[in-house]
Amino acid sequence: MFGLKSRSIRLATQPLFKEKCLYLFARSFATKFSEGVEVVGDIKDGWDRILSPDAVQFLADIHRKFEPQRQTVLHNRIQRQKLIDSGEEMKFPSVDRDNSWKVASVPDDLQCRHVEITGPTTRKMMINALNSGADVFMADFEDSLSPTWHNIVDGQMNCLDANTGDIDFKNADGSVRKLKEKVAQLLIRTRGWHLDEKHLVIDGRPISGAFMDFGLYFFHNAQIRMAKNSAPYYYLPKMEHRTEAALWNEVFKYSEDYMKIPQGTIRATVMIETLPACFEMEEMLYELRDYACGMNAGRWDYIFSMIKVLKARSDCILPDRKQVTMKVPFMSQYAKRLVQICHRHGAHAMGGMSAFIPSRRDEDVNRMAIEQVTQDKELEVSAGYDGTWVAHPDLCKLAKDIFVNGLDGKNNQVERTFEDLSITEKDITTTVVEGGKVTEGGVRTNVSIALQYLNQWFKGNGAAALYNLMEDAATAEISRAQLWQWVHHSTKLDDGRTLTVELFRTILKEELEKLGGVESESYKQANDIVKDLVESDEFETFLTIPGYECLVGTIGK
Image 1 (tube, rainbow, N blue to C red):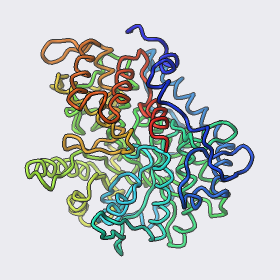
Image 2: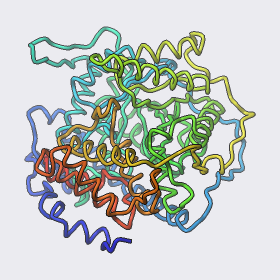
Image 3: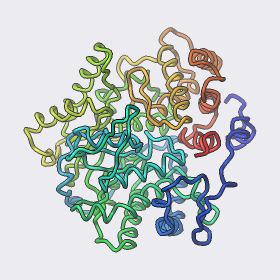
């Protein structure tokens, strides 16, 4: 469209990738593993507790057995997307079977999930989240964690210490934070199938980030949690199709046999955060029925996926992000379908994240955050959800009270099956937002958020409070995806102007200068990636893919 070369050529010739993406394969960790297995990068004292030869061998065995299947499901994603791009309509699967099946019984310590707090696996964050009063803490190796080598390995150390009760953190004033007697239940979100971990190389190929995150946590923590009458619990992100859920099912069974623990010990919550998954959610739940205990409405990734999957359609242009709420029809129908499918089969339906965060310094900001979160959580409990997400400890009691009151003190409302609800394919893919507008302010906000988030990401921070909202990779994806959509469809702004590539470049330059310009922090890398993603003829599937190549080169830890 804009005379750019293919993506592979562009990345190879851009200075950003040519000079900055210096992989660490020249610096090998000295510990010797089995033939064909190499841990690459720096090593810190104590990390051999996590990267032990036995644990790394387990990862290598998973990789060798399941990597071909992972590559197949990723290839099939591309093929299905080509069909959609060519105009093929998305349809609900047609399956001939008795639909009275149920998922495995939900463990006692997961029956009540009124409020779940999410965040990265940094040590201080984990202690605060576990002590927050939430029912569950989802320790995140994905969207809210910048996947530096240090963050990944240190995060596994922190999870292990949390399970043994040995985690603490020394504050700047010398005081020490420790776990309270009662803490939130710990769940782990792995990276998605699409992401690699380039610091563990097996037979010349990097391991899947999902295999890495799942495997290290499972190997070191399964027995510890079982000794406490619990089990390893996971969140599974970014899936699109039943075959991707079936792959997890096989990995779980293999791993339980490997560790000689009973089949069906693991429990997983499936995240429905892609448009294809909204069509496939019942089949995905079926494939994981021996392990699944719930599904979650990952609203921000879902909005991003709507743009990505329907990118070829000029009738699916979304307005400014703030106008795409859970009350607009296509979002509401997606949310209702998830509750219906979950409760039909005995699984918990978990609500999503309201991005508003409270302020202890600004009363007006705090009041708005409380009002917005209250409305959001009241909507979820009335729609049938069994629990919800928050991003800040100060919101835990608010959300908890709303669900306790809304459920009359019950743990959940799985008995509400909503079988009279009828949702069509058109209900899900019609993206009309009444009164929706694309504004210059919306363009500028998206540009600024994309730049600021990537800057933080390159510095090792995967979650950032921007404009009183908690931003992570999912919300940054919306920002850059909307920019691509608006530019490539020559979208009209509400003032009558067309968002051309020239206007985008002008706004990008102006917003970058407000942040200090290319000489400030990691803004040159952020600017180059945003510009390339928005102007490219091809829609990059995830910004974290090219971002990770740079992250490895710029941080190298």
